[in-house]
Length: 298
Image 1 (cartoon, helix red, strand yellow):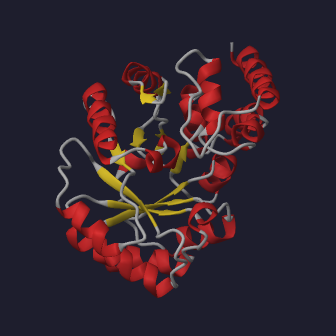
Image 2 (image 1 turned 60 degrees about the vertical axis):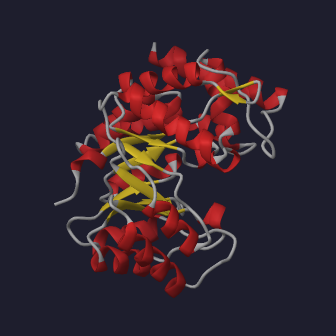
């Protein structure tokens, strides 16, 4: 049986900064905001959390803070376990204190463009040392290599340590082939907000969302309706939110979602180089679209 903890809406939370330092007060607000909004679990220190710009001490402090503020209200998935150096990552996992963490989200290796066989053996090495279940993460837009559906299904069948995949290829054909051929205990969740409802309609279990940082209630309601086969409601919410996607990603993630959180008064829109804050023109467009959505849902 699939782990029901990861059915529904997960949210890849941002790491708020203020004057280039981690803003722990704002991080507290973010965690409480998404939980009160009804998300089913939190992913901390993913790419949306700007993990690549945090040093090890900062990353540990962020994760510890999220665990503390969460108070076991929802499961926590740690996303700061990705590397193109398999041996180094195995050592990191072997020596890490995972208290308070429920699962790991691990993307396939970036930059080196491994073969499917290389990707398979990379993950098989990680599952040997991981004390926690692993959610695979296929995000070819960042890694520059796609993990094929056959590799995903092979991993799912060869180790029970792999409990699901965040499929962010945007390819519904690939996602559907995974859904059709996976073992019963393996879930498939969308890594792209724009196709999240459609992936649920194809048989997926939900989403790990960026937009749910800003609109956790509405995104959770949309996914919940889709999972309940109420596609009239799901489609309505999806279309109400849909135009915001353009402005969230027009200058990259998490640049857009941090500006959205600033519009909501939750935190500053500070990012760390090489990311740069949203341009004034696009910020104003994003704000205008958010205000339209807020009028709709008021």
